[in-house]
Every structure is written in structure tokens, then in C-alpha cells.
Length: 166
Image (cartoon, rainbow, N blue to C red; front, side, top):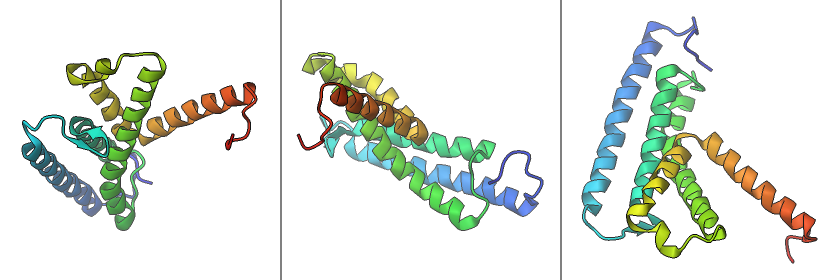
């Protein structure tokens, strides 16, 4: 893995990272602008039960995550195929992780007794932040999922529900 102090990076590899970053930013920004333009002023547009603004913020979070790692060379592959695969896969994974964190936030709100209208309309802006964080850091999202699943399994084992089937 390359890092900021890696003496093995050649000038050619430095240029490759630079142009990859510029191309990546342009493609993803055009994609985001295109999706936003298509759904602009359409009421309550959902994809797979997730509001599109949540997906957009998760996508932006994953783009920023990739740019952060490319800029600071944190956990970036040195082989071209690994790097390109990661650059393509990370935004898609970020979309799903952002949606998953959104669903976890909704479930948490329901479990805490939040009224249904508290999670709709303008009150949903904080969920965009949650989706951004979910898209930015898949490690953070996976950690959150593990923590929640562990608490649920611990609670079920205390109440005598060790068997998942019943």
C-alpha cells in the first residue's frame, strides 16, 4: 500500500494519481448533477424505500472518502487494477452503506418512540448527515452495524432467546 512517505512512487505514478483524481471528480460530479437534475422538484422520490437525497448524500460521502484517501494516500493500492477497482466500487458500496445507516437511524427512532412525522420533510436533514458519514467511512458503518447486532443478540440471549428461529 502506498502512503505519503513512500519513496517507491515514481513521477509517473504521481501523475497517474493526479489525473485519476481529476477524472474521478469530474465523472462523479457529472453523475451527481445528472441525477439531481432528473429528480429536481419531484415530490418524495424514493429508490428502494430510501429518499433520493439520502442516497445523494451517501454518494457524496463516498466520493469525499475516495478523494480523501487518494489525496492523503491512505489505504490506496499501488497496483493499477486494484486502484481502479476500488475507485469504481467505493461509491457504490457507499450508497448501500449510507442507505443501511439511514435504515438503522429510522429503526432507532422508531424504537425510541419518535412519531412518524418526525422522520419526514425538513426534519430529515440530519439523516442526510448520517448517510454522508455512512458513505464516507464503510469501516464506521460496519462498526455501527456490528455494535447494534451485538446489543440485539446480547439482549436476546439474556431474555432466553438464544435460538434465532424462535
